[in-house]
Length: 191
Image (cartoon, rainbow, N blue to C red; front, side, top):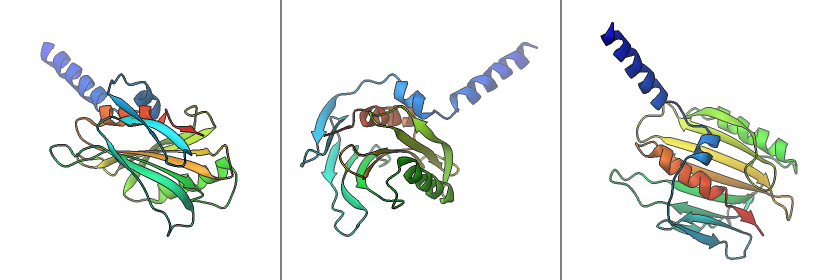
């Protein structure tokens, strides 16, 4: 009987430890890390990034739908996996000026991607503006795969949208890495 109870406890602990974190759990996950503030050169937005991360302005001259953006990335780990924060401004999925319409188009694209499994999506209290999100994971989510959380919010200054993405390699540190990125994205401020 004692063996069965120990086995049940082990199964319960294992299944609980493998549960997928939600965006809200990443947002509240206790993690401390040194930060630096970065500001887009034309001062369109600013946010905090981990201090040891690199970032660069992306050139979207060939992409009519995107007006500006950055990519920020961690140093590769011992297996060469990196984590990436990406921010773009524009209208990528529809010609609508409506945030919910743009989100629904983004959600439809996420559902159609055969390489990703949609975990959760919807409206969230995350930034100063109304914000929607999608949360996906590579299918089947094996070690070295990817977990992606994307947010969309309307610009305060024009009819564009901001798309904020956090992409973490699925490693033993995925919870910590995703929590760091979500907590950084939460500091996003538009000028």
